[in-house]
Image (cartoon, rainbow, N blue to C red; front, side, top):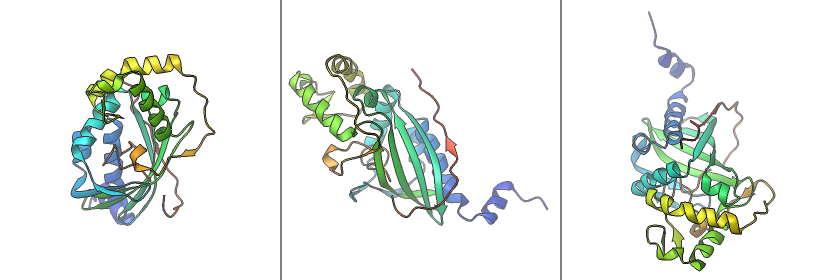
Length: 234
């Protein structure tokens, strides 16, 4: 009797379906494919920030964030660190033009996903850090500068003193990033900076970007396999 390979994998490793769901979801993220990402969310999916703040996934905001990331030439990569029952832990890295311009470097996130019936029920950010300087701090400084130079009057770029994360905002942002880069000399902070827990300064992730800011928890030994991003598309 011929047994399908996926069935053999499932019998040998009962956590495989959950890991497969998360892997496919993160591949969709790599491609900035909102529609495919949305297929993996349960109707009542929630996102939990590193500070413990829980929100339902804001699907409109997630769509806008993917559009913004595309305009900012964002690249994502990920590695599945562990899978235990319905829980899958993944390491994600992100780079984009905004991070580069603000001297942030690479964002590294650890996220714990809970899966049931091939749908993601919960995405919890356990840890988020930046290789050069914390993004919330850099963003706050940049937003203050934008207000000083009058960019806050552009309502496609900013609202209530904060940068918007949408495709149109990214287009309007480009000349300001160029001006910022000319006027500021970045002094990199020591590597491995943890993000501020202040949610008002966090833009990352599904209430905000990918998960409300992305992932820690019990450390599980694993042999992660890195899935590299698709490369920049200019």
